[in-house]
Image 1 (tube, rainbow, N blue to C red):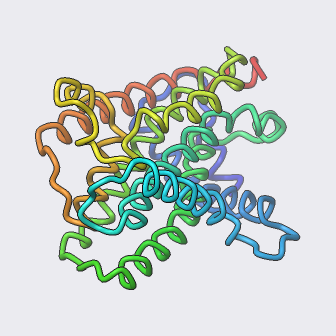
Image 2: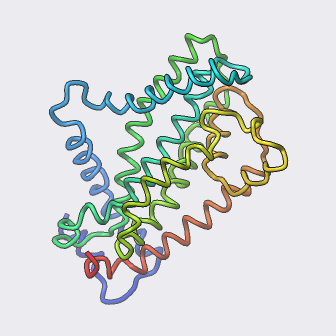
Length: 273
């Protein structure tokens, strides 16, 4: 392990390709840190990791009661199934942004003591979130089965949609993780932005509820398009292919630029912590 980590120590800046090779050689750390976080988060609890269901299920109950009683929506499928597809994608995204955005600040002692590619830390958060996402996914499939929803061959594309979900979250989380080290106010702003962002995202309501003149906004709203992909795949709701393509292209640009920024600033992280 020590021999591998020492490969990451360079006198000067490294190329992106070399850095990613160093991350790959340290990939065991991703699993080690993810397992550590899961143990810390759910240690000495009676329900263990099942606590990860409480937040999305509570949100589902509240908004199902709200929209079914006050603002009935036509979704074509049971509203609980419709809403949970959005909740599932949204909560994975917010977990990635919130946890990876502050991961360097929360691991100051580790960063000071060990030399390793710091990108390992936000990647470990993606793995933690994937475990929790998988539990929500099982619940969604159970809900679909008992609601009489049909299962489509499009479910075979699930790994690609999950990857889009991960990259969308990390594209913002990586930028924030590097910026939060220098600008500590972001540490307090991130939860506020996440809490407010759900109202601007079609998690509990369909995009048809938004006036057609504002639909162009969704070209720049990657999370909305990821949720649309989940709904297209699970419950057959239509999507705008061009809109999804443009949105994911913007995510790719944001992710790659964030990766470059993260790598270029990694050597200075310990100085700011």
